[in-house]
Length: 363
Image (cartoon, rainbow, N blue to C red; front, side):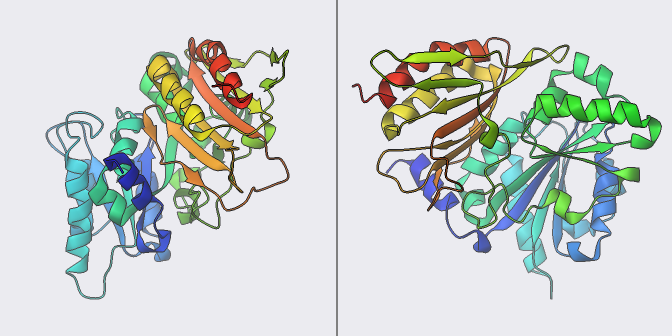
């Protein structure tokens, strides 16, 4: 068993024994700190540890967060997605130790507030692949705050903002009081096109509820509360049925003009797949697509399994595959959903021959 498999096994250990983590992200000025303060005032949020990342060498935001100093850790002088990478494990483990040392206080949950310039996937990679963190923590959700007043210009010019949105399990729209209802409705539609699998909520005056950041396991396949995601049930853009004269029918993916050619599309495979061949195809895609593969999520019908294998990845940060004990519905087909940019959809289509051979039982 290699080290990645050991980490994957640890990641599927009992969720009850691990501390849930929410990655709170959003571009500069979106209102993350205001939202965080609102959340920390909630009476059920006692025992919340906060890791704050600031880009500059002098930290300010941690002084603005209304949490006890011993419950807050600052990572300054660089994004935790790049130059301050190694500090995230130290910060999270230190939080647990400090809170355990206090009487009548234990660490119940952690919120990581990133700098507005942080890419989500390197941070997720650390949480999902660092053995010391996997043993103690589990990733509950990625929440992205979007500024309704400035987001139109931001999406046109800032690639990081696009990455933050496509990585999200939930998107919270702030500053809705600064725009009219029609603009909010248009923004909701645009966000749904960029990331159809994310839940989208408005937050008036930055007021958030705990359940908007902590799902209780809705995004964790090992949890009884897991839900596969609405988009997977609607996968119908790419389809093939293996046969002697196999036909692949493709319909155009959903392109979002002006948002750097982001496309959402789906793939259905009618027959069970060989595990090694499927995972080899996914690894092949990750290598070929690189940063153009923004997100992939799916339920996979693997030969010999009673339930589906769940895969979920944000760019290069992939959750360990998880096997569910049973299918969530009567549809047992493999269903994959992709969010890509540029030539991502084209690359998936061009490599389907390999997956097709796999489904047809070819060597």
